[in-house]
Image 1 (cartoon, helix red, strand yellow):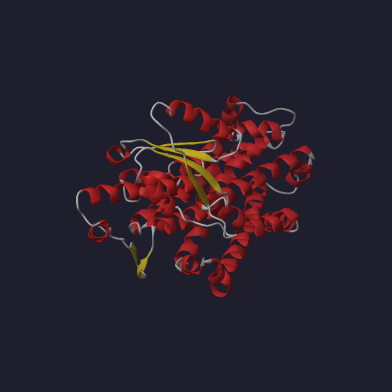
Image 2 (cartoon, helix red, strand yellow):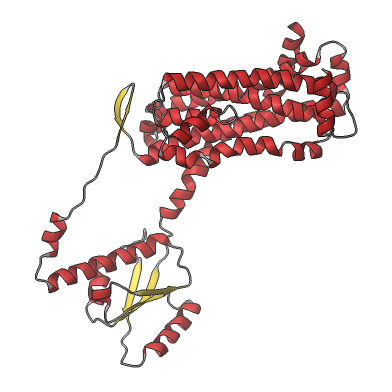
Length: 420
C-alpha cells in the first residue's frame, strides 16, 4: 500500500504544480457557461445596425402605420428603422423590384419590403435584403406587420382592436418545480442551464483526466521509467496509483469550483443575475456530482490506462481511444429526449447502463427525483463495472507495459487475458 501511496503523491503533486491545472481551474467553469449561454445571447442581442428600408405599399394603408410601429431607437438615439415609401403605377412592379435590388446590392438601402394589394386578406409580404440572418430585426418587422394587418381586419369588421386584444390576452404560465425541499419557480431555460453546465463539466473532466492517465502511462513506457517502477512494485499498484492520484486532482478542482460557486452566490451573484440559479442548487446535487464524477472517472480512467499500456506512442493511442470517446459522447447525444421526459422507459434504461450512468443518471436527478432504488441500482452497477474493468485491464496492463515499438493487436490482447 505504501508503494501505491508513493505513486499517488507523485501523480497528484506533479499535476497540481502545472500551469494547466491552474488555468483549467480558473477558466473551466467560465468556458463551459460561455459555450451554453453566449450563443443564445448572440442570437437575441440587437446588432446595433440601422436599417434603411424602402416600402412598396400597394394597399395604401399599411405604410403610415408601419412607420409609427417601427419607432425603435438605437443606443445613440438614432432611429433603428428608417422607412421611405416607393410609389409605383400599374405595370412597374418588375422594374421597381430590379431597381431596388440594385440599391440593396450597392448598399444604398438595407432592404426593401413589398406589400401586395391583397396583403390585408392573405397576410403575405415580401422582404428583400442582403442579410436575412438578423432574426431580431426581421422578427420585429414581421410582428409589426402582423399587428397592423390584424387591426385593419378588425376595423373592417367593426370590432375594436384594443377590446379584442384585452379579451384574447394569453396566459403566462409559471412553472414550479416540486422536490424534497418544497416547491420553487423554475423555467425550462434555468433547468436546462443548470443541468447542461454540470453534465458538460462531468464530460470534459472525465475525458481530460482519463486521457491524462493514458498519456502518463505512455510517457513512462517511452522513457523506460516503467521498468524501474515495476522492479519495485506490482503493475496493479502502479495502475492504481496513477488512477487515484489524477482522480484526486479532479476532486480538488471540483471542490475549488464548488467553493467558487458558493462564494459567488453569497457575494457577487446579484450583480450577474446568477444568485437565484446558484442558491437553487441543493447540497445533494454537489454530493452526487462528486460521486458520479469519481465513479465515471474510475471506470473510464481504467480503460484509458489499458489503452496506454497497449500503445507505444500517442499517435497509436489516438486511434485506439476512439471507442472510449464515443462512449463518453453518446450520453450527450441522448440527453435531449431524456431532458424532455426523464421518467420514460428509455431514460431509465439508459441511465442504468454503467458507461452512460455517470452523466445520464445525474442528468435525471437534476431534472426530477428518480426512485431511490434506481439511483442505488445505477451506483451498484457502475461500481461492479469498475471492479470488472480493473480486473480485466490489470491483465492487459501487466503485459502491455513491457511491450515496446508496436501497438498490440486484438488477438494478442486476448492471449494476454487468457494467459493471466
